[in-house]
Amino acid sequence: MANVQLARNLKTLRLKYNYTQKDLSAILNITRQAYSHYEKALREPDLCTLVRFSHFYKVTLDDLVAGIIHVDQINESLPIYNYHLGETEDHKRSIFLTDQELELIEKVPKLQCQ
Image 1: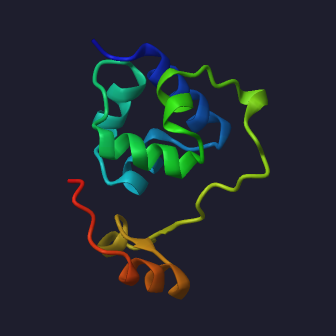
Image 2: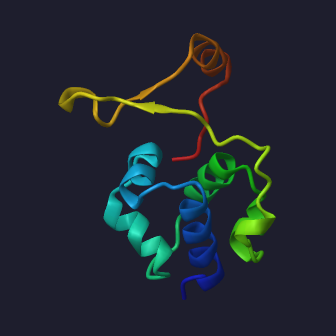
């Protein structure tokens, strides 16, 4: 049984930050249909995807999965990650990182979450 509160929270957060389902599916490297199913409570994301949502929106997993997130309670001072998607057809699913982000990624051991 899918988590209806999670679905509501995902939609609330997406709309708050003016993202489309297509935007988020590209950023999170999932299909738009998969994302749509999350928002409709037809399917639940796996733990790794939940963690990515949590980091992306800077909310706790507990709040994301079980809390009631209201638009007016979202802390505007916490910036959303500022990824830049590729502009050309060859790079439309690419995310461009800063040198500092790349340096940090190289230092972190490979995660086992698949």
